[in-house]
Image 1 (cartoon, helix red, strand yellow):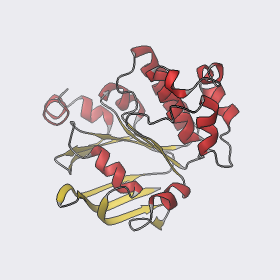
Image 2: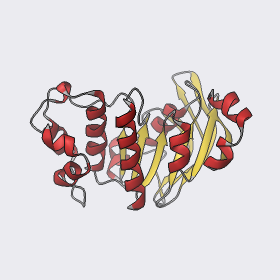
Image 3: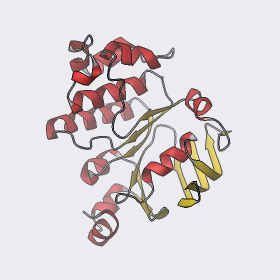
Image 4: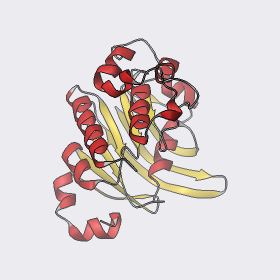
Length: 227
């Protein structure tokens, strides 16, 4: 589905990512982990063409390393960005309609997934709680009917009950066969969901393996993730 080989990225003259390789298979969930500032968001930006990058990036067999962001999105990549970035003056329904593309995911399907959004569909997005805004950001991404869903800090800053709801929804999406690349600090929740971890350290891939191996490795957890 998604393959990165030897991908490097920079912000102007400042290098930020070095020779990163990773893959997300069809129907697979991959966790991108690491301490703050280690390159997780830059990796996502490189995939989406939002930062200067080099190397090989393929999505669904197509080379996208030189493609513009709008073209990459149209190929079937949906993003839930860090900080949610909902349209604050639009209503919940308007936020969803703004990104909708034809497919199985409709506004009604999103409301079924997140009933709270249905209850608040006429409210402006700025009146929602942080958790509700995250639900809206996920729903907005799903309405692009993506083949790959990318979440940058999936549950950051949310109440425990809302975090549990988000993880439950992601497990449901996985069971439906959606490919997911997810960044989050909750290693235990990621381990229960992800098929594989890719841990970044100082812009490089430092470790790749399954969740059980990561959780069992106290030295790795503390040294690379600060857990």
